[in-house]
Amino acid sequence: MKRFSRVLLTAVSGVIMAVVSAAGVQAAGLISPGHFSTNFADGNAYWYSTADASINVNRNTFIFRPSRNGGPASIYHATLLYVTINTPTFSGSDCFQIPDSDFVQSNGVQSATLNAYVDASNLCYGFATALDGTLAGAGCGKGCPPPPVADIPLPMTVSLTWSGNGVTTSSVSSAHSICAGFNMAGQASDKSAYSTAAGTLTFYDGVTSPVVLSASDFASVDQGSSQYDNQGSVDPRCFGGV
Image (tube, rainbow, N blue to C red; front, side, top):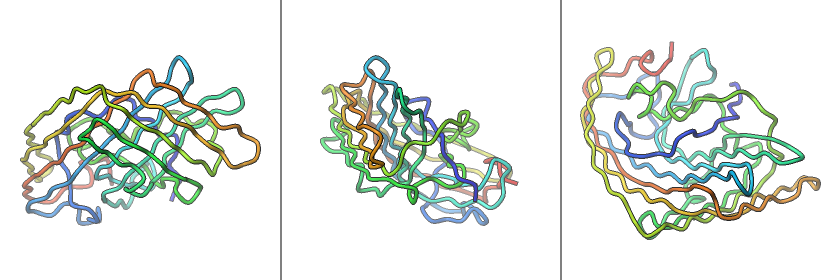
């Protein structure tokens, strides 16, 4: 399968409104009729003034496709880490699949920590697309790859802490999607908070200096859950497959 890197989340996750699936379902059968639920969580941070970087963590149910041209796909729950960094010595952007335990939220969404060690074995393979955004008609959702850039020096440790501003927004939304005989109706709940993030990127190649990320220019944390009742099975063409 073709390596998927250079993925950048271009918008902060908000209320999730659309289709979600149970973990571990293969795309050949896709979503079967019945009741499904899933949890999602995100942490986003951007630096413009003190650095040129963004770090995004997205825990959700994803469609993983081997290439832009479609082909066999799989659907499962995962935690993905997206890192984009530009320094005087290198520019890079990559997607990594990390253990759920690397990203921990506490005190609702008022705090979160990310401690992830990643190397080539963690790189995302195929194009990862959040299933909810795809079937909601948002194109490739959070998995749209920007133009290729140079790779990030690996291995790398990403350490980041989010501190909320004390105000939490709670939302509940309903959704109804229909595509090629598949009918889904359900509800999603979401909590989100603006915050400040700070941390470091540490490299182990013996050449690249650590990157210190001081207080971010923008950051947020959110979490939620979705429950849906589905009728019919999803046609692969609904999410761009063959």
